[in-house]
Image (cartoon, rainbow, N blue to C red; front, side, top):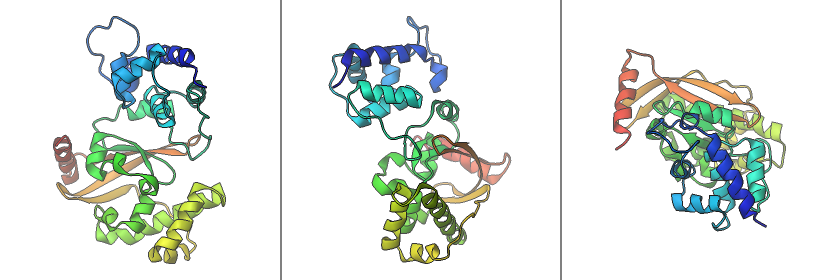
Length: 276
C-alpha cells in the first residue's frame, strides 16, 4: 500500500536539502525557500511539475516503479533512501548489486559538472545510464534504446549500424574486447546472471560472437585513446578517462581531446552542432 503522506513528506524534505549547485544547476534568481523548486525537481525526474507537486502534497496517483526510480535518481538519493522511497510508494525495492540502474549520489555530483564534456555513466554490460548532451551528439541518444539493445556489446554483434562510428581497422579489436569483458563478468556474476543470459543469447544470434567466445580470451585491456568517425565532424581521437563506482559496478567515462589538435577543434564544432 502506498503511504502518500509519508512519501510526500520525504520528497519535500529531500528537495529542501538540495541546492542548485548539488545537481549541476545555476543559482538562478533569489529564492524564497530553501532547496530546489518543485519545477526543477520535476525536470530532473523527467516528469511534469504538476505530477510531482501532487506527489509532494499526497494527492497524486500511485507512481509506477519506473517513476519512483526516476524520482530517486533526480533527487540524487542514496541507495538506502531509494529503497525507502520504493517502500513508501508501495513497491518492492530493486535488488542490490551490479544489475541496478540507480547511479550513486557521489557519481551523480561529478557527472552533473561535466555538462560541456562528452561523458557517460555506463553499467558493467555497457548500458548507458546517463549521458551529457555532447555524449548524445557523439554516440547517439541512449534513451532511444530498450531491452538488450541498451548494451553496446549486444548492438555490436546484432546491429551493423552500431559499428559505423568506429574506424574499420579498429573493429576487430573492439569486438574481442567486448567478448573478453563479457566472459569475465559472466563468470563473476554466475550462471543465472544477466551477463550470462546476454552471452547465451549472443551465442545463438551471432556467428562472429561464437567464434570469438571460443577463443577463451580474458583480461584484454582497452587503450586510453578512442577513435571515432563521426558523420558530421569526421575522425576524432579522444582520451578516455574512467572512474569506477565499485559498489554499483558503474563506470563514468569522460572523453577529452588534446588542446591544439584537429580532434579538439572538431569536438568544439560538435558542441556547436549538438543542439541542432
